[in-house]
Image (cartoon, rainbow, N blue to C red; front, side):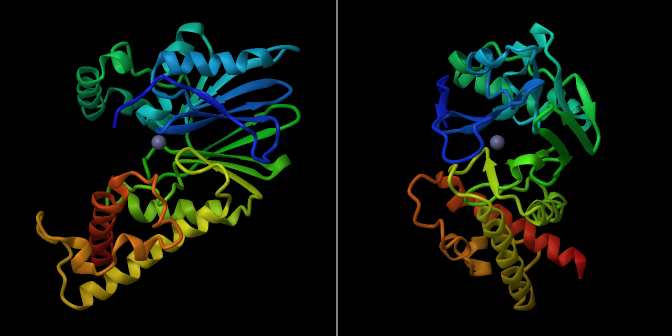
Amino acid sequence: MSHSNEVELVANGGWDERILVCRNAPLVTTFIVITTRYVVVVDTMINEVTAGKLLDVARPYLTDGRSLLIINTHADYDHSWGNQLFAAMGVPIIGRRASVPIFSEPDTLTFLQRVQTDEPGIFGNVIPTPPTILFDDKLTIDGGDLTLELFATPGHTVDHTALYIPEINTLLAADAAEAPYPVARTTAGLPVMRQSLAKLAAIHAETALYCHAPTDIGPQLLHDNITYFDKLEAACRAALARGVPANPAEDADVIELVGLPYAQAVPQIARWQNIHEYYRTRGHAAQLRMMLESVSRES
Ligand SMILES: [Zn+2]
C-alpha cells in the first residue's frame, strides 16, 4: 500500500457534533472528541505530518480552558506513529500499558525500516513513541459534558482499547471491528477478539464508528463481524469432521479445503469494490487457518 500525508475532515453523517471524524485516505479514520474540559485526539495517524494536521483540526477548540489529550487505541503504525509530535509538545498520550513494549519490539523496528526504505517521504522521520499515561483495563476521562470510558478490547492486538461515550450512546470501536472483518494476528488472539466483539455488541450503542469502515455502516457491523466468525467456526468444525487437517500445508488452498469463499462469509460486503484485495484472499485464508487451529485445540 502506498501512503499519503493527506488528512481530511469527514462531513458529519449524523453523529454527535462533538465528534470530529478525520481520514487519512484510504488507510485510516480517526477521531477528535470535543468536551467542555478536554479536546481528545483519538489516534495520531502515521507520522508527525498527519499528526500536525490533526492538531490543526483540534486547535480552534483549544479555548475556554480546554486542554489537549491524546489517546492511542493501540500501537499499530496507522494509529500511533504521529505520537512523537505530541510527546515533543508535552501533551499527555494515554494508552494501554500493554502498548508500550510494542513500540520497541523487533517486529515494529523491522517494519519501520522497511517502510522508511520504501516510502522515505512518509516514514523517514518516524520515531515510534509510546504513550505516557498508562492504564491496564479501564480508564474513565470525565470531560465535563461527555465521559470517555476506555476499556480493553484485545484480539486484533493484545493492547487494543475501545471507547464508549454514554451520554450520547456512542462507541468508538477503533479496530475491534472492521469492514469486512477485523483481523486477528494470532490463533490465541482469535477467540479473544470474538469475546471483545460480543462485549461491544452488548453495549447496544446507537452510534458506532470505526477506523477501517465506512462512517455510515453503524452498529450493525459489530453483528456482521460476529456472524463472519461464527460462519468460519461452523465451516471449520465441519471441515475438521471431514478430515481436513487442523494445520493445512503452507501451500494448501485453505479456502477451498474449508469450503467457505469470501463472498459467502460476508455476503453483505462481498460486492463492495473498495475493499483491499488482502481481505478477499490471503486475509480470509489466514483467519480460516487460525480458526481451524483454534477449534481443533478445544476438542
Ligand atoms: Zn488500523
